[in-house]
Image (cartoon, rainbow, N blue to C red; front, top):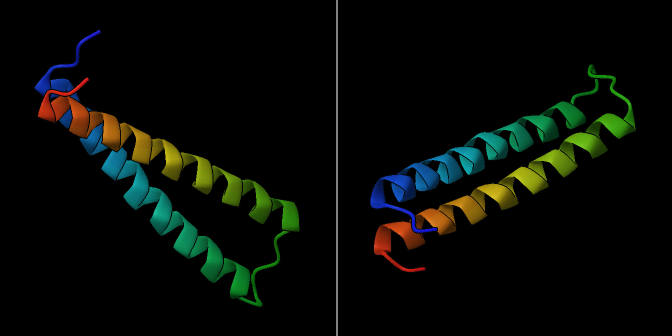
Amino acid sequence: MRLTKKDGALLLFVGVWNVVIWSNFAKNLVKTAKDPEQSRPKPYYIAHAVLVVVDVILGGLLGKLGVKALLGRR
């Protein structure tokens, strides 16, 4: 399957969007964890940390695929 430049631009946008949004969520998650008024169970932080890591990796992979499509590489 060949990706067009339009597909590449969309993949790059979605990849960057994922990294930006989930990085912001991670920052807020750390801020919440340090706040003594917030009482959340430990599994909450573990589950969300796993989500952040997986989605940032997926965003990076989508961005890389988008750049390859924009540059015309396979």
